[in-house]
Image (cartoon, rainbow over all chains, first blue to last red; front, side, top):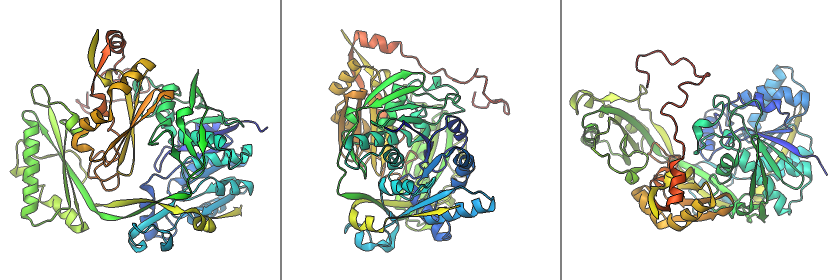
Length: 444
Length: 141
């Protein structure tokens, strides 16, 4: 039976920190996984690719690899990432070019493609918009093509839209030789992946308990798991780093965004988290065991997006006394001015920070009805990008012609329209997708 | 004897999103509080506390193995992260309203809750690692 595999979560989103990798590497992980894609990220990357066909991957990938390549070459660390985004081939080309320019040898780079189905309109569900209107359409692939890449001795695997947890399950299946119908092991590996995929969120980040007592919050430790052949895992963090691993931090991440905890659907297995046991071992270690699973559904999850107009926002601060009244008055005057200018809006949304912006009707009134200050945020959407930008022009004059003491911008930034997206989620048949999934390997 | 407390005195929440669905989990410190949450924090009460913030239905899932109760709120993010005009378009702060719900608890549970620590007003004021805060006379202090 193989030794436990040590896996680290090295990235939790496009834009995460790279500094924590130094502490992670001091713990000699066998595998570091860089999880770079949220639901929205592919839309950002699709826009990049539309401008430049060599883009479409998360552009912090080179920063992560700069930190990881020495360990890959000297210690045999394997790196797996979905940073390929909408264009994994271009990401691999970038790595090959950069490594070549630096004279790096010893990288064996595998690229996984086949998740991008935008160019295959026959695969899109009937209720989806036509492929021409979509910015992207990607199936969530599972662990299998990554295992294929590892079997080909890749030490860097670059994928597109692979399900987050599958990035972690794959090296476990490869290392421990788990079978594709061993539902308990596949569930156990998926739980480990789910716990590690959000980096610092498993080690005390966003900890809603006594967050102010989390040690060394300026030097957050990213999570590390030692996963045994039977699927039992111990979650920990680099000993020199800050953060915290205990029952509370791990259970918060266990249930994060899973909806029905008895049926967490992934491309490889449907996981039942209600059987998971968490045992706090002390010293920032939590043992995870007991996950159960059953076969994954017949189709892959499919996520696509189309443009949904443009939005911008503008915020202004109002001070005591009567700050709320001034803010509400300013919002109504702004809306009136926009209407009089003949600018048609699709959406108009007003929030009063300091009153109830985040929690709406759940917020009880203040005892004397007098907040010290209120920040008014006005957000609007339009079909047309130019019109979206013109709206602000009709709000700003309230600075000298609105409620006292004057319209104090809460930000120095000028309103800048950004594109809204309409997400479409569906299911796509596996067979035609799998038929186009391909793994290619380049040796440097 | 019993007392009324906001749920936030007893438990904490973490929230996430998928599309226009908000996913909020309540975490209890022990089995006694977990049982109270299961009994009193019904989907109907949760739906009512969000009012117009949540346009769709509310589903509840019990997860006793980690002393948690999850609420999945549909049509809850103003159209979903990429199309919502809300500042909190991903609903990271959506755990708050549930914590304001009033809960009836036995005195001994309330006594435990009253000992629950609160963050200091300025948590890192005395921390050795804090970088110099000078620069303006006021500076948020």
